[in-house]
Length: 427
Image (cartoon, rainbow, N blue to C red; front, top):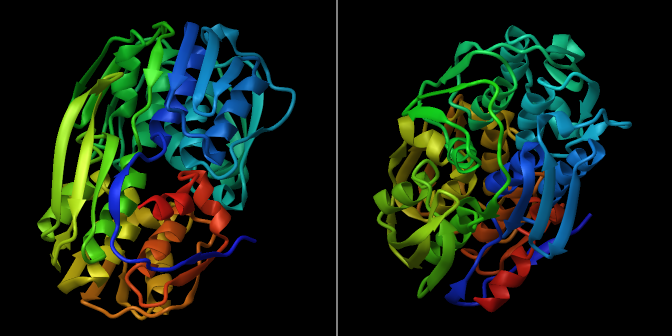
């Protein structure tokens, strides 16, 4: 078990880059693996989750060469180029990997078994299993396929019109990947729009699809063509630096080459609504994704309500937004975020309980949090609980204490932000 000691060292200043976007890194490997020809991936996130995706596709016969610390070449032979794996496909801790992988496997005519760690074993898979069965896939697992291990025998799929009860890019992406291998049209509708990395990247790989707000559709039988993918910095990782700069007096930092996909920038909107001084300059597009620089300056924050359609655009950033709320004047209310209960941990409970150790005034609700500020935080021993975002959130909170914070199980942070500790010394 790794224990990280995070201590405040004055104001934060400078320019930095954060590791590549985790969601885009997963998709670049997966799409390259089922495409025809070579896909060059630059800016790949070298975290545990993404390496597990690489390992799964290597087990299915895909040649994936590491060309550098963050560069890969994926040689795809199309959908039919995948072969039956000899061993279990282990996704580790990654919900993105397992749900998107199930969409790929649903169209493969061989047998496979997918497993993960203890966290994955608790996360609900029926949200993708049920529609995949409607499309013709044969899938079984614990509690009628609700939980891993999952046994998949795919093939002979047909498109469906699926109205999802949750706004989930993982559900949407899973069904689109399955639909590409089936016959007819696949349509996915959501209650509100989730992140659209899959739609953007499929288009760049030559897939014809229609994306109109909450509704996405495509025809089956399409072939992906390999291409170069440049992965921008992960805005979910950048969010921890943004909050740190906003709550540490005298700070001003610029984060270069961050992904600015509008379905992911809810954290910027929320922090600005709290009074945060955040300047965004878009500099271009990488593989269909807007990219730019974000400059953040220390600010006096105010409590706000964060709810509704904003939630899917910042769901992963809520733990660190709660940290910002502890340093804001007044009360911050986060609602409509029940999805947090089925992440790597129950992030509603984990966020509240860990921040209370530091002296924060935080209440759990059925679908969110109520945070009363501004609070003087104190040093404590916190626990990531094996959840990378909880670990980073309490580490950032430590910067607002006189003596810092210790974080147990800090190795979890490497899942999405390798080099997290080192970046603070640079700033």
